[in-house]
Image (tube, rainbow, N blue to C red; front, side, top):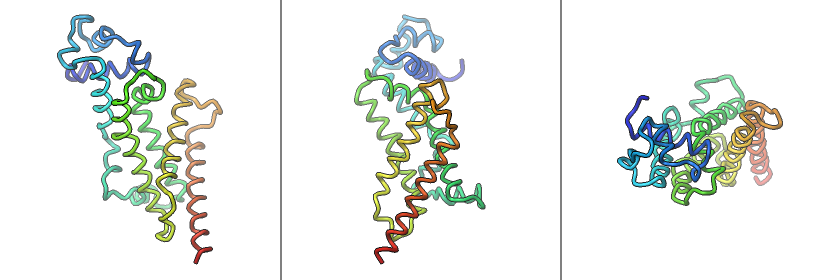
Length: 216
């Protein structure tokens, strides 16, 4: 196994918590999965308890932004970046690409999402880490992208709520698909599903444009 002992413990713990739940996972199992002597107490040289390990593991994984880091910079233009990748594509195509990126992030954090969405034995401190370091961060990224597409006279619409709806729809697709072994029970593939969300976004954009014209 590569990586530091601490990293190996975090990786093993997240995988086991995601597969079998926090309460059902023992310290001995984590130690063995991390390549340590099971029951020898090696985990406690790095974490005071299994609860502390969970909080630190979730925080460590969620703050690994990796390829997603540029999207979170305040001055990063999501739509300009999408334009550079596919300059001739439609707004629906660009938004579908953006939502694919969000779905990829959910899959990257698969174990954490399983813990948060299925395990009712975790504490509020873990939920707060997720709310602050993941959910709010990515809702704001989607919100910024939507505002870039919105005409100035339509920016007083509740785009924050709309962003939460779209992020929730993407998360729901991932959760249901994961529950059914990786395929959505309707057999609707990710591109069709995400394109449908993108079409709803564009419909709302056009609706707000129409509303603005009606008020002028």
